[in-house]
Length: 211
Image 1 (cartoon, rainbow, N blue to C red):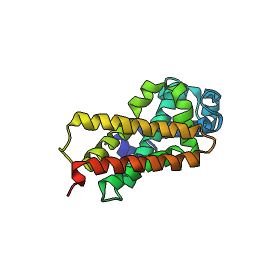
Image 2 (cartoon, rainbow, N blue to C red; image 1 turned 120 degrees about the vertical axis):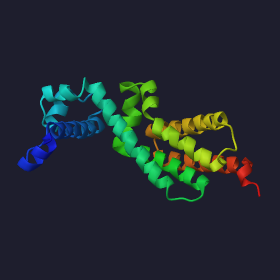
Image 3 (tube, rainbow, N blue to C red; image 1 turned 30 degrees about the vertical axis):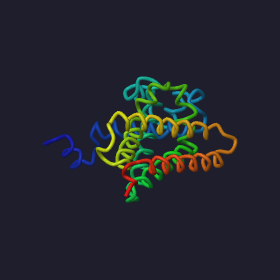
């Protein structure tokens, strides 16, 4: 009989379940403290106290605070990617789907907790290289969206890759600018207008737009 079946019969949690619960407690507590106090000011003691776990339990799951922050950052990016994919799926027109997915990226990045973690603290805590490595899902979705909008097989892959880098880079820079802007809502609306103009221009030049 497996450990899981024994645990179900006795009502006791397995080691794996206890480990998953501890990890989740640490992630949730760290997210709240990082958002409230910032990465630098948040101590391991404060995280462990908030999660109600010992330092020993912490070090069983994470090497240090930076590794925990990376895990929190990864989860934020996964949640954002899921929201973008869901928004994208609501539209039949691939150009509108691409624009709305990009809009979800910008709006989602403005959520205060996510913004503090992913845009304000992450560059210093993780560095740009690690951030780019973790953000691959969002970039892949941009590549997919552009491929669908431009028409599958109509452009060489390297051209779509190049366009993806430019559009995705502009999108990330817009999100970063909003994180430090005096009036982020105004900057968001301005960015959306520019991206709409950009996508409409590319659409008009694309062979798929010709009758």
